[in-house]
Image 1 (cartoon, rainbow, N blue to C red):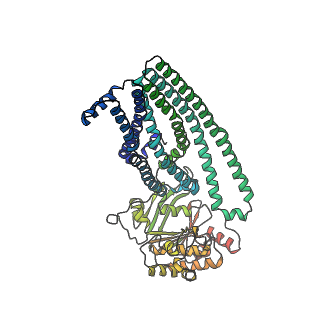
Image 2 (image 1 turned 90 degrees about the horizontal axis):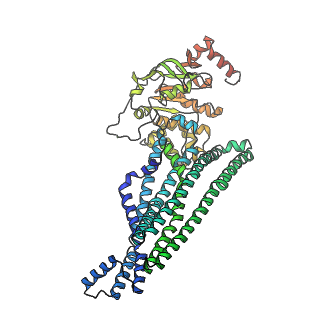
Length: 605
């Protein structure tokens, strides 16, 4: 559960420079009070009233240094020089001690946490991405980082220094007339307490709205991702109506409840502030009329108290802005506190110490049991030995556990019971990153990044030579279409490979896997969604790989697995049959029935 201190800790790496810059800005705000004080002393001087003792001491010291008499002229010069130093002398210094360091710190913290957020994205378990689409995740991270970046300069460069200015004003008035200072203090505490309590209620509503808006943005992201399906089913009007309803609800809550609440709160704040300004004027005037304070002190109190009350609105506005951003910042930290998955790989690899493996490809599934939900096993007591360089096919009805077995092999999940051994070693004892580098997989839907063909082909092995790439593409039957591309291997394929057909993406996926030179290569239903011509090309590619390494083929189309050394039939999470294509057809079991259904053109259940 995220806490307020997490927002503060966002900048803890830069706490020293933060303290220095906040201290400098606050000091400037306090020093700024010398100007109205000096103006008040000038009025005293011009009205032949006595100067305050500190000013008299400063004038006497100046007279001693310069040899000039401590008269009215020297006093005016001293006060004018004081005003000039404070108002003009600090002008070129303040932007560097304030805005520069405030924004510099914000930008540095954003860079650091953007990296940490990416680390979190890379280490979260796969099931998190099954429940949260990319739009939702990206929006939460981007919004949280953005609001942190904008909030820090406002809090450290404006809010905190303004509070110090108010404290300084209280001290100045206290030294002149403590009763008025007490009135200022009580009124200020009352105003801020009233404002912050109102902001707390509005911030709670902001948090609820933020979650609702995140769902809306998530749906918009899904529409963009699935735009072809939306157009194919002619549901544009339906999607627009649905999103419009959500946007209308957001507007009503945002405008009539939250924004209206801020306006009402601001109205009360302004009314109370103006009442307090009037009361200070009354009490200060009474003190001056009764000769309790001088004319200069009267002007000073009115000026600095007006400065104090003038800060109420900016302080409350800054607090309001913080309240509006608070929910998204907290949700960002909730995301950052999510536990990494057991399938997380190493994010930092030292080539000098990182282990490297080389396997023969012998894989042993020993008494393997696994369930996504307790009490509902997906795999039960699986025992399967795959010899080096052997080609094994996993077939069975949907939901029989084929893909889950591969996920366990890649250590996306840990088995409930049993173990997976590679060359006799429990894969859980191996370095997960080094282990995965010896495996490769071609999915049913090959993920393509927006970049060149060469970038995608060498994604798993950036050091591969162009000759290695070409050889892999030749084996994968990909070279024939790449050479017809506008720029060959330098062709940009577009986001998610939109410029490639399904068969082309599959062949790119096979070539990418081969460039890894894996000890174990997995085809996860690599031909199930392809047309006959593309499927035939993929089958030719797979046939050329047989015997070169351990192959595991998951297939719905049984024509893909005829030449496998061993076919394993899974049924309800258990191994039902094992044998070659001909052996299983003669056996007359599940495989024979599945084969008969496909031969007659019926759909596989």
